[in-house]
Amino acid sequence: MSTSPPLAVALLLRLGLPVFTLLASALLAPTLLAFVPAASADSLSGLRRLLDDPDPSARAAAVRRLAGNDEPVAHRLVLDVLADDHPYVRRAAAGVLAGVLERRELLARSLTKLGEPRARAAAAEGVGLWLDATAGGVLVRLLADKSPEVRVAALEAFVRPLLDGAAPQALPTAWEEASVLDHLDRALADRDGLVRATALDLLLGWRPGHLTEARLADLLGDPDARVRLRALEGSAAMSTEAATVAVLRGSDDAVWSVRLVAAELSGAVRSARVLDRLIQQLDTEPRERVVAAVQSSLVQLVGIPFEGDQWRAWRKGDGAAFDPALREGEAPPDVPRGTHTVETGRFLGLPLVSTHVAFVVDASGSMREVGRDGRRRDVRAREALDAALASLQAAPKPAAVNIHRFHDGVESFEAKAVPVTESMRRRVTTWLASREPAGRTALFDGIAAALADPDVDQVVVLSDGAPSAGSWFTKTDLLREVGRLQRWTRARIDVVRIGQDGVAARWRRLLEQLADVTGGVALSR
Image 1: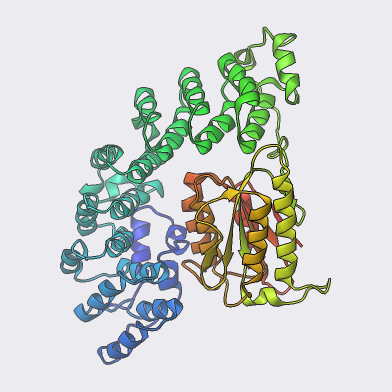
Image 2: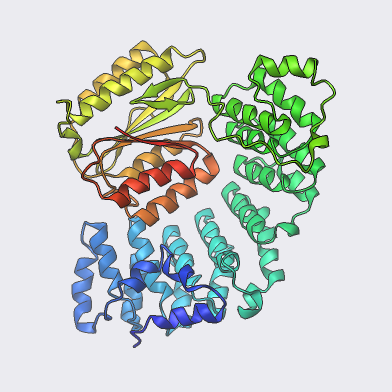
C-alpha cells in the first residue's frame, strides 16, 4: 500500500510537465495538497456511511480519504463514487483515481464497463493523468463510447497532456503524434456536434497546421454552430483570402454567436470585401452586440472613429477608393472593448447592451438583510429589475428576457426568454414577491440556467455573497465550468455585487473574473 503522492509529481517532471500543471489542476489539487493517510480496512465501513452523507462536500472529503489506498476494496468504493449524483463528488473520486499507483491493469478492466455515462466520463478525467500504456488503452476505448459525454471527456483527457507541453516521445505509444491525430480526425466526423467541436478546438490548440484551409472551409458549413464558430476562428489565422471567405460566411450565419465572432475577427482581415460587408451589416444586423463589434472592427480597418450613417457616406465619397489591404503591416488603432456599445437600459447602474437578456438574481437567505438605505436587498433588487424591464420594453427593438433565482438550487421564470410586455412585468413582480429569500448560494446553477438559452447574449448576475451550494461552488471549479459553457455560447456575463462588504476578497475577485473573461463588467452597489 502506497501513501506517497509525490510519485505523481515525479512522473509529470519526467514527462516534461511543470509541477504547476499538477498542483493547479482542479482535479488533483484537493487530493494532493490536502493529502491524508490512507484509510485502513477497519475504517472503510465508516467511510461507506460518510459517502451517503447528503452534503456533497462531506462525500468528497470522504472519498479523498481513500487516496493512497491501493487495496481492491478501496478501488471498488472509488468506482462506486464515480457515479455519484453530484459532479463535485465525481471529480473528487477522479482525483483519487488519478493517484492510483498499483493494480492499474486490474482496475482498468472495470472502468470502461461502468454503467453510468457520467461515471465513465469521470473515469476518463482521472485515468488521463496516469499517462501510461494502461491509461492509453482505457482512453482509446472510451473514445468509441456510445455516450457523447464520455467521448468528449476522453478526447480532452487524451490530448490535454500534449496541450500542456508533454513531449509525445516521452509518452507511451498511444500518444504518438500520428495516432493522436488519427483519433482527432475521426472525432471531427463524429455524429455529435459537441464531440466535433471539442476535437476541432483541441486540434487548433495543439496542431493547427494539421488543418488545411480547405478542411476548415468545409467545417464552416457544419450543421452545429459550435463547430462553425471554432472553424471561423481557425480560418482567421490562415491566409487573407481564407480569412476573408470565412468572416464573410460567418457574417451571414443564422446563429448570432457565429456572426459576433465574425464581426470581432473582421477588424484584422485587410480586405475591401470585408469592409463593405461590415458597413452593410450596420443596416441589416439585428443584434446590438454584433453591431457594436462591427463598429469596432470598422475603426480597426480604417482608423477613423465614425458612427452609423457616417460610414456609408464616407464609403460613397472620400472612402470610395480605400483598400484596407494597403494598410497591411500598420498597427491597428487601439479600440477599447465596448467603445461602440449601444445601451438598451440599465440595471442598478449596469449598462444593458442587448435586448436578449437573462437576469440571474441571488435569492439566498442573506438577501433578506436590510441595507444602508433601509430596504431589504431583495426588495431593492426587485425594484431595480422592474425598472430595467421598463427600459427594455421601451427599447427600439423588441426585447426578450428571462429571470433565474438561485438559492439552494435555481428557479426560472420561464423555460426561455420571453417578450417584455406590461403583463410580463406584472407577472415577474408577482413571481418574485411571492418567494421569500432562503437557503444558500448556488451561483453556478443560476448562471448555467441562463447560458442554456441559446437566444440570450447578455447574462446579468446580482449576488451578495460567495457560492456555497449547487453543482460547483469552489472558485477554481466555478470559473472552469462557467468557461466551458460560455466558450460555446459567447454570451457576456455582467455582475452587480450588492452588500458584499463582509465577503472575502477572493470571492469578490471571483465575480470580477467571471465578468472580465466573458467581456462583461462588474459593479458594486
